[in-house]
Image (tube, rainbow, N blue to C red):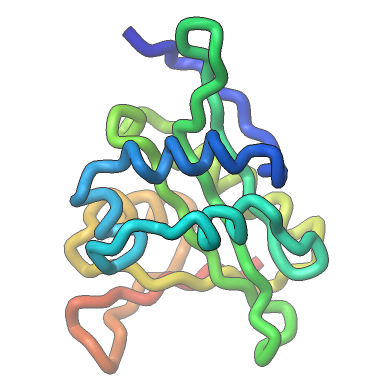
Length: 161
């Protein structure tokens, strides 16, 4: 049985194994919703997700303790858009067994607060139009949702900070 308590903290390069286990443990459906693809992340991509450049990005992870070991159960991140100053693209994913329990709201709100602190004026993302959990989370936190004009299967999410 899992604990309902999770700690939210910045990701570190030393979290490679935590992140690797986390992404490898996602169901095919959850992995597809996050990457909009069936591919699995390479070690180089996982390394890139843990060894971030704090000048242009932020990643927060949610962890819990299982049998005395730290387990990652979620991650949220933003990357600043170099072509649109003040704007950053964000992404979030939770372990399947931690979805629909409030952790996504806490993680994304933590990212929103940090983005404001770091001078980000707008957060944007795209998600599949069938990703009802993400759409509901975005609505709850005040994002504007709009069908992508180039693809009816994709919804654009925007939050002005």
